[in-house]
Length: 129
Image (cartoon, rainbow, N blue to C red; front, side, top):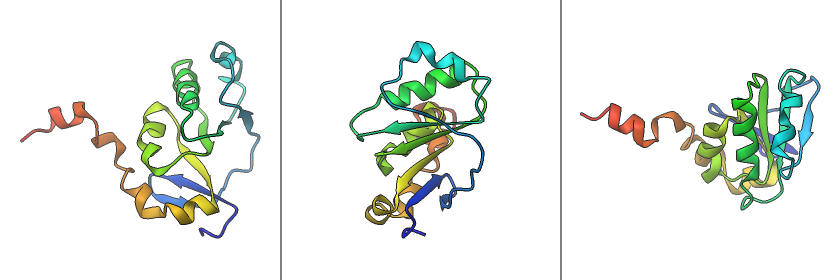
């Protein structure tokens, strides 16, 4: 699967893109105050990450979820395995990466972060022995 042009990363690992519906593509520099227009009219929103060093897409995802967006939310582009936990916590359902990145950061690196819900300090405090 890593030879594919694009790879979808979910908590279960790498998968092919099974989306066939309409998608709204937003750049990372979208004005957060304009996001409310997409909350009820979109089944999937894909937010572009031009660089792994640019975290604005995480803010957009969080703002969309807080505004009530219930559809599929996908981070697309330069997101690295170390950022998967942040992507999920900010509201993304999945990450779309290139086949090239999937080869450099194989599935096991992403799966190590798939238990993102149990890796925060609140979880650790609640589940101390």
